[in-house]
Every structure is written in C-alpha cells, then in structure tokens.
Image 1 (cartoon, rainbow, N blue to C red):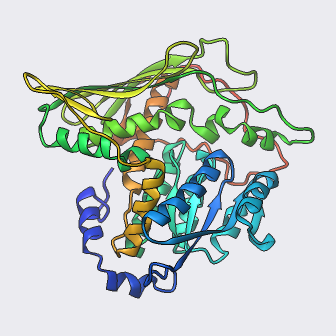
Image 2 (image 1 turned 135 degrees about the vertical axis):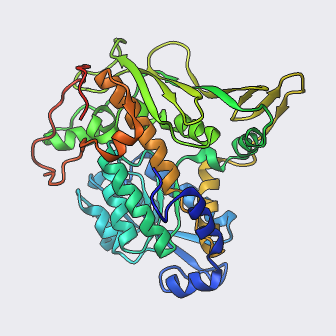
Image 3 (image 1 turned 180 degrees about the vertical axis):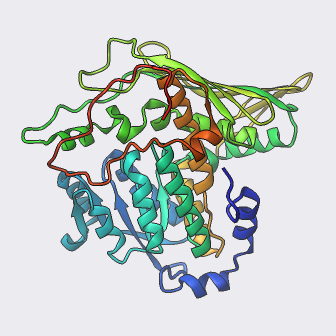
Length: 418
C-alpha cells in the first residue's frame, strides 16, 4: 500500500534530499553527532535473546560507523530479563523498567534511539510511541500480527519521515552484500524477467518454557509468546518473513493476493500451543509472477533459502546468478548483517540522511499476514481488501499482566474472513 507522501519513490527522494544542516536544525538536541566521539544513548525494549543480541550488534555497529554507543536504559515485561541487561551494561536502577508499559520508561529516559525487540504483537504501538517522542528506532521483524498493527506501523512510518527520524528493521539480508549484489544483478536484468520464486523456512521444533509458579495466564503466554497467534503471528510471520521479504525485494513489489493451506501434523508441538506447524502459500504479484512459500516446524531436512526463476536464467538471491548459456556468478557477504544493519542506521543519522525502512518491513509483515489469513480461512486473500477492509485486530489494548489471557484456539479453516 502506498499513501500520498510515503510512496517508495517519494521516500527515496525525501531521504536523499535531507541535508546534514537541516537534520541538525530539527534534531540537534535529540542526537548530537558533530564529532565521532559523541555518545549515542540507546534504550533496549525487550531483553530476551534477540534484544540482548541486538544490543551487542548496535554497539558493534556504532564502532563501524565511527560512533560510541552506550546502552543506557532497558525494559521488559519480566524484571528478570531486564536485570540481565542491567548487569551486563551497568545500567542505573532508575533506567530499568518492567511491566507492560515499561517501554514508555525507556523512551522517556533521555535516549537518542531505541531498539524494539519485543514479541511482534507489541511492536506497532511501541514503535508509534517512540516515533511520537522523536526517537530513532531499530525494530526487529515482524512488526505486527494483524492488519490493524500494519496500519499503525505505516502511519507512524509517515511520521518518522516527516520528523526526519531513522528507522531500520531487523531484515538483515537487506544489509548483506551477497544479497545486495545479487538482487541488484537481478534487477539489472541478469536473468531476465522474474517469473517464479520459491522461498523456504523449514526447520525443526522451537522452544517451550513451562510456566513458572505464580504466573498469570497473560504472563505464561508472553513467556511462551512464539506459541500464541496474538503475540507472534505464527511461524509464517515470526521466521518465514525473512524469506518473504526477499521475495518482495526481488519482485519489486508486495503481492496482490495469497492462497494457502497448512495445519498441525507433526508430533513435536507442546500442549498449549495454538500455532500451526506447516504452511504453504502461493502469492501472486502485479507482474503475474508467482511466489511459492513453504514454512514448517517438522523433524527432518531443513531449508532456509530463496530461489528465483527468470526468463533468462535462475538465481539464489543470497549469493549467485546463473544466466542461460552464461557463466554462473557468485557474490560474497562482507560482514554480518546483524551488525551491518546497525552500522547503516547510525551512519545514516550521522550523515543527515536517515534511512526509513518502515514501508518495506510493514509490507513484508503484511505479506506474511495475508498468507496466514488464507491458510486459516481456506480463502484467497487479496492485498487491497486486507489493507483497507479487514477488521482483524488481534492485540488487546487494555491487557492486565495479572489477568486472563486471550483464549487459546487452534485455527480450523471455515471459509470465513474477518
């Protein structure tokens, strides 16, 4: 979906036109970067494994970009998670927050930038709050679990552009040279028009944490967030989004429709989980091309990759092209995308040309969502309908951490869409 003022074309023009002088005029008090030694104060929202890793990656990315990054505030629903990062980065007690509204404490603590690494269901509202408060953002993927959340992201993304705030998403493949160079070659016509892609995230089982004594229903579900649709969006959102993002990147667009199926077949899912363990979705794109998506949590052979078929050859967008009748060419990655994405974010701010990846990650998130909606309903789901008319809103607005949680209900296709 492209709204006036936030199209890909306008976004690129706006980003390129922002001068360092105008950036300092608007944000000088928020993010001083006149000298390479200036300290960038970063707050971490979500202190689990990904938040912990992103904090380290941000510090490393700052070094590459010639800036000193200091983690100065942390937040998590669970105090125990917060304490781990507090001790690791020696954060003052007053800048450590826990609970459902803890993210507001981090945003309001005087940081220049925030890392949002919470369960996907929480991200849209947290992102909106950070942008409203004038903070640069690194946000992990996916950024929503339903169309309502995607709409919040897109609106906040427009606000970020207006405020000249930088936003980078955790779709690290877009910051890896093997993908960047390969996709550029594809877009330059190396294998002709793209007719079909197959994308995969097929792996084994995932973690499950037994509820701790005294946990409420809400706490127990958040502690096992991957297993609940309102929190993670199912595997097609949480993990397979990486591959769907590559598909959108290669195809140069989001899909126009999704038609899928799936279910729960393996005997490795824990009791209490409501997500499916396999999905298969065919996406149609504006040029008539198709992308076939496979995702699963099954024992056996795994596959996390993408493959493209063009009118004049084939490609793995992660590293090679093979034109018909020509020599196969391979591309290598220069540095970990997990670190490079932070380096690119910080450099864009220091250069006065803030990146804004909100549109791309929101569209990739929505691609996963309409695929899941099709699987769950048995119906073909059109992009425009989902973006403009779907009333699906999975995340409770007045959640009580000590109260009851949303009902656990394994989806069964019924031919209905909301």
